[in-house]
Length: 170
Image (cartoon, rainbow, N blue to C red; front, side, top):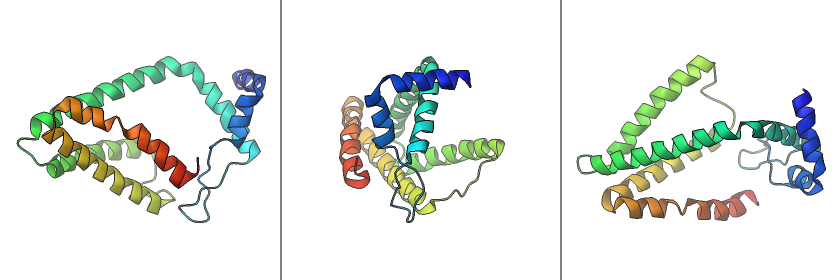
């Protein structure tokens, strides 16, 4: 509790930072319709700001996880390139998805999480878009030199900026 108060004081030092937390693009998942996101209330923003600040003491752990993530995705790209001569992009997406499904199912059962959370239409849409993106990436990896395909995949932040403005109003 003292740590949260200490981190809350850190937030209070900068009014600009507080304004970003209170008025920034933080969104709640409360919806009247699944595609309309409601802004957070001031009290919700304050509690989230304190929680986010409280987590900054684990920067080293987060850094390690990001390095592991980057290494894993790089290794996946190498294996996709190697297997693309024997399998189509659709087959590679299918096998990757089956492995993901098995791992996530065990994880969710272990943690007692729900398989059908609220907001299902948005999750289904996200899944369809994710599979389409993965199929496109795997096709590109199979038909382009690996460095070029990965370089083009790094254009993703440009599309995130564009879509966050168009779809989220950020």
